[in-house]
Every structure is written in C-alpha cells, then in structure tokens.
Image (cartoon, one colour):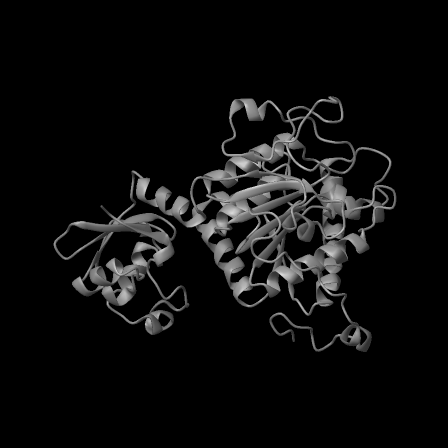
Length: 402
C-alpha cells in the first residue's frame, strides 16, 4: 500500500534508507526570473533531452537533477505536472527496432514496452524525495471531448490533492497518425489548459525563440518576451531537429497559442543543463509568452461568452444569494431542471423569477440533476448509485450574468 506522497510498504531497505541529494532551491522572492512564480506548473520533457541517442537509455543523472527541482518546487507549495515523451525512444531499442525508420504498428509496440520503463524511471527518481508518481496516458479526445475532458481534469486534480506528481504522455499504443497530437508540446499546452495551470515550461534543445534559426543565421537574436503569436512570430519557427524529437519551434509556437488563450504563461528554455527548472527560476535565458488574462479569468470568459447553452436550472432565492457571494450551486438549492443536457454542458442558472443569474458547466446530466435536486450533497450516492461532485456547478465553472 502506498501513502500519498510516500513510499510503498514493500520498498526495499536500500530504497528506504537512501538519502536524496539536497534539491536545488528556487530563488527567493524578488530574485531571478520575475516570470517564474508558478502555483500550478506543467513541465514538458522531450525525448531528445530524456533519452540518450546512442544507447536508447534514460539519462538518469539528468532526470535525478530534474526530480530535485520538482521536489523543491513542491516544497514551496507548487503543484507540478510532467508531460514526458520518450516511451517510443526507450522501447524501440529493447525490441530491436533501431537503425531504421519504424512503421506505425512498430511505434505502438515500442511505446507499449517503453512506457513501463519510463514510468519506472520517474518512480525511482521521485521516490528519493518520498514523492508518489501517477501515470496518465491521454488521447486527443480526452482533452477535446467535454465529458472526457472533465473526467481527466477531475482525476488530475485529485492526484494533486493527494500529493502525487502526474506524469502524462500521449497514448502512443493506440494513437494513429490521423488522430495523434503528433508532439507533446501541444499535448502539454492542452494539459495546462485542462488543469488551469498558470505556467507551462517547454524544456528544449534551444534557449528560446530566435528571430531566425541560430544554427544557420549568425545574426539571429533571442526574443525575451512575446505577448501575442502573430504571423511574424510564426514565421520565425524552424524545422524539427534530427533524432528522436518530433517537435521543433513550429509545434512550440502552436503550444504557445493554446497556452495564451488559456491564460497560461509559457517559457521555452534550454533543458539539457542540470537542474533546468532551478536555473530557469534563477534567470537562465528563455523566451516567455505572457497572456493578457489569468487561467481562471480566461476560462470564465469562455463560459460567459458561450452563445448556445444546452439547458437551464432554476435555483431558489437562498442559492441565488449564495452564488452572489462566490459559492457553488449545490443540489439542495435547485428547484427545477429545463431542457436536456449532459455532464460538462454549459447551462443557464435562473432565479425564482425566471431571470438568468449565472451560467456554468454542469457536473451532472439533466436527468441526474432532476433526481438529486432539493437534496443534500451527502445523499447523492444513495440517490444516483454513485458519488459524483458535491456541487451541481462548482464556482470555478460558474460565471455570474451581468
């Protein structure tokens, strides 16, 4: 059995007594990079950083140093999620699939064996800090289809509350060329959007966005801050590097668009150095993409601007007053359900007089809301046969109407 944030009872004596190196500490407030002050951080790690080109093995010393950074950030109160490539790169060597381009089904087979090795490497390195690791494999539909998006977000939120570090990868074992993300830069941005992260860091083989490809143009200069991904900025993207990487600056700029739209700041920085997050926090070179809104305000702006609500709920006067004080909508305050909607759909909240008072994303389908309305949250499991959220609409998924 494993306790949240702790070691399993079956850990060996060697594991239990091994002392982790002191984690690299982020700089004190007011020092280092002023943009690096995350409350919820998504870190994307590419295959080219994590996997040795020659041996196909995980670079354990580098990964240990990154884990030290993660431990220091968590100790400072930051939620950390890792989006990691590398399963195919690690697995192909163990299946004898080296020295040539491999077919889709061979990539899927390599991912199936490589993902186990990759997860074990993360488990071992973070266990040095008594941190529990959780593996999550996503497909594009998990971030784009509304109900699956909500399920994935709820799982990740619960893992973070329990003290675990989610390690996320695309589900390469079942993905096809037509439906896959194609790179983990965009996957990382989708995850940041999903969990309302305020900071996304793409660890790369380059220390930021340049005016031209610095490998080809001697006069190329790094751009320190980008506030909008314009056509001029997009024109600065180059080709993907050779080797295991499937990304490149083009995919990083696509990720930046997603992050900025979600109100999440994003950094591109050189990741091959040891302790890459601590050095970024201390002021290492990077390109920062800075949004004009916070993650929550961007999410609520989307809710407020949605033009086609799927249905409506009528709330009593007490519930309406509670909403005005920033509270969630509980089933006890619901008196009627109008329309047919599903979990995750955007619906209107009406007061006793029929006027719209708010809009939000329903945690339950219309039929289930009708069954639990007027009841206490503690009765949900008895009525529905399963325990969902305590709220019909959580305050983070709700916007008051003008």
